[in-house]
Image (cartoon, rainbow, N blue to C red):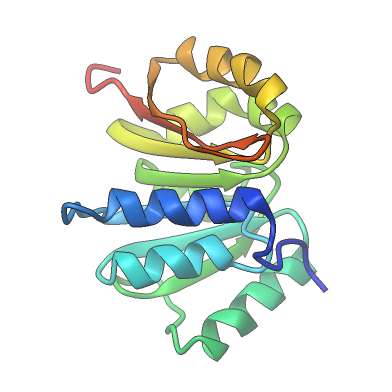
Length: 177
């Protein structure tokens, strides 16, 4: 009923990045899964960063309902406190709850290249200085345009793993931004 069953190369790339970010043990306290779909990335982050406050958002209310159900199925607790998952319906960063929780130290966004470029300003503004941004859902041929949109807002590429034609971009916001 919702996009993102977890079988696509972009999802695999993001999950590998989440795993890599957790070693050596790095702590993220405030995480956003933007365009959560079925909540696969939010759940992956919850497993690796047990004490984090994680919020997932999606433009589709059905996806939000599915995300909540998937969290319960995976024995993750819903709520607004540390170690719990919260889900909201929102177009991009346009939700009071998302704005109230900003600045995030980790943002995950596995959506398409055009929306990633279009939301570069608001996503970058929601990321804390020194925060990490993981972008996926784009083809290798779209990578340079997506990187340019975020580089213009003070982010630098940390690493770029690729699964087939699907890169995962890991960017860090300069701490002076």
